[in-house]
Amino acid sequence: MIYAMTYQSVNPFNQQILKTYSELSDSELDNALNTAAQAFELWRQKSFSERALITEKVAALLRSQVDKYARLATLEMGKLIQEAREEVLLSSDIIAYYARNAKGFLSATRLRPRSGRAEVVSTPLGILLGIEPWNFPFYQLARFAAPNIMAGNVVMVKHAASVPQCGIAFEELWQEAGAPAGVYTNLLISYEQVKRLIQDPRVQGVALTGSVEAGKAIASLAGQNLKKSTMELGGSDPFIVLDDADLDQAVKYAVSGRMFNAGQCCTASKRFIVMEGLADSFLQKFKSELEKFKPGDPMDGSTTLSPLSSEAALKKLLDQVDRAIAHGAELVLGGKRIPRSGAFMEPTILTRIQPDNPAFHEEFFGPVALFFRVKDEQEAIRLANQSQFGLGGSVFTKDIKKGKRVAGQIETGMVFINQTTDSTPELPFGGIKNSGYGRELSDLGIHEFVNKKLVSVAEQAKPVEKKAAA
Ligand code: NAP
Image (spheres, rainbow, N blue to C red):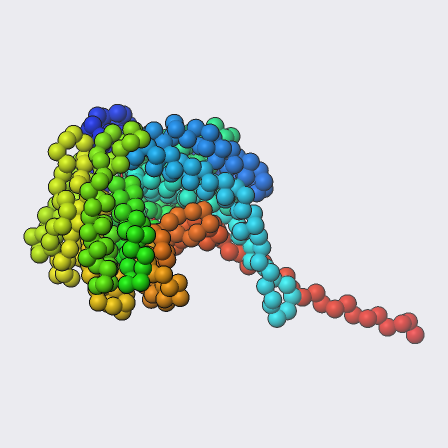
């Protein structure tokens, strides 16, 4: 079913409505599409260094005004201001990374055909549509826009309805850096208008980051219209602690892995799978660390627990916790809303979650940890893989060889040994199973939406030797 949406900034710390925007009319959307189509004809002809000049400038503008953008993210979706600053700096790094490396990543690949010469060249496809979530309101835009714009495509972005100011600010950055109109377009549009865009022949691809439900809806629209797509969807990352792990190190990462961004990360550590020998001490230390979190104003640098992104997100999480307990889970910590204004959730730990409990299969998008104890490595791997998701995961052990052996058997797109799932420009990001398909970031990210075109040159016929005139 298609719902109309309202683009509205609501500060989740105090529920204050900051700004409301109306959606584009269909004719405004047509104009934006025409502008993007014209921009593509111009942009595709530019050299890498011409594109890099503008793209580097976007990176520099973000970096030089980190507080301005960080405050906007905190205001609209509630993350801690220091985490928002980190996000803005990482976004700037990603953009600069593609400005510097796109040419090398997309250079022609020489082939060795039986005869003649051949190479594969990478050419842009056209207009790409990005559909992005609110949890990293700048980073998500950076990792979609930078590689694709550097590859010569132009992008149109439907950002989440709850972060319209971040979406608009990011578009203005490209304008300020001198990008021709239509190279980057922010769209305040409905789901129905998203559908129209995917149906338009000028739109050649769609990248979605979001929930499994949104992924299914958009991937099927892309499929019906034979459009290339990438899907970066939800996750329920396993965090495996083997019996030889450094316990304090594991607990430290468990806390940051679950609590970063108030737990609202696709790659947050969500399922803590600990071997018997360490299980009790891990649980006790983990619990006492989570008890230390202090809710407060996310703009205040001393706050350690921010509100969730919205009242609706909090209600959904509370409902999941209640259902988990109703189906037999045991509550070790938290489980309730924090009685103060704002969408605050207590850090929570649940144990004794059996496969017939819906919690066993769901993604908990907030500060709720699911704890499992296992008897050996094989049981840990089996449990880690008993999930519809396959995004990231961690293994803690002092024996790196063993860590790699376990990593090799985990069914996810990314595994980190002795650390939590991380994202930097150079590392590919993406998943398998219901966590989606395709990769963003690294060199892999820039190859998703280019035409890998074969150019083959026939072998020259050998010149016929002329006989000397008799
Ligand atoms: P969401 O509800 O799926 O929304 C994501 C984006 O998709 C928003 O812009 C949303 O628009 C749009 N959307 C949803 N359904 C749509 C439809 N039928 N047609 C057109 N657009 C549609 O997800 P969310 O709650 O914002 O984000 C949390 C989810 O994203 C979690 O599952 C998380 O794990 C996942 N995530 C994954 C990654 C990754 O890289 N794998 C990264 C971050 C987040 P509206 O806001 O207007 O509804």
